[in-house]
Amino acid sequence: MRVQAVLVFWGVLFPITVLAVPIQDEFDRNQAGNNPGVFPKWKGTPPVNQDLYPNLTDGINEPHPLPTQVDRNIYTQLLRVEPVDQVQSKVFNSVRFNRLQRIGVLGFENKTFAPFQDKSAGDVVSRQAYQELKTNKHYSNIIPPQLMEDARLKIVKSPGSVADQSLPDSGGKAPLVSGDRVDAVMVGAVSKYTDRYVDRYGKIQKSIASGLEFTAFLVDPRTQEVIWGARFVGRQRPGVQNFGQHRGRWLNKEDFTRSAMKFVLKEFRNLPQNNLEKPGQ
Image 1 (cartoon, rainbow, N blue to C red):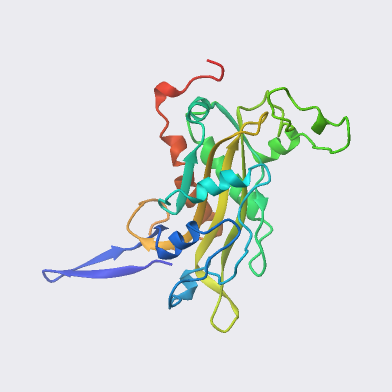
Image 2: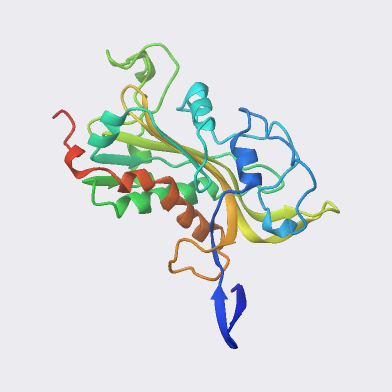
């Protein structure tokens, strides 16, 4: 869908293309500042154009996109970060972050819920994270989710199992994957991946915009220390930023995820060249 306006200037008509890009607003800030496990209801009068708000719900205790490998207190720190372009992002260990060379991407956990559950959400978002990292020249090797699943160590709770054979520096935790393959593992979870909304009559309708909520974290594969984390919560909106290949149209869920991932992983593109060293140097 292409949205255009017309500007009249000295008798001449100029078309103005309105671009659909992530921009934070009152609703996005409201969700970004919620307490763990609780989403506040919309404050004030709900928006007139409900089809532009696929993330809008009036529920509480909705699932947060917290992956099993990340402690709740780390996620809480992320919630306190002021969102920029609908992203809350924090580097927890800048030395480790700047020295990363090999990153493996695990499939993201799917925590989408009824009535907007989407079984493909975790796979789509983790795949877009891999594609975005793969184009980054700062890194020597990015391993896709399907190969990382083969490398993941199965955690068994029985005595004498792999889970009990923790490494000396692991703090009693079992490794996520084989540590000789990667310097860090990207894990995440998706709680909203939708282009639907509930209208004022309680019926599910197709939305013009797409809405997302997900997290991504870089974790040490041996110690499970969180090196970096980010949370995206928002929807596509008309705007005048980010001139790109999708100008002037509403994006489907997958294309919007690709656009959002560029904002989520922007710190990976801005690494100083003189800080890039091989691990151990």
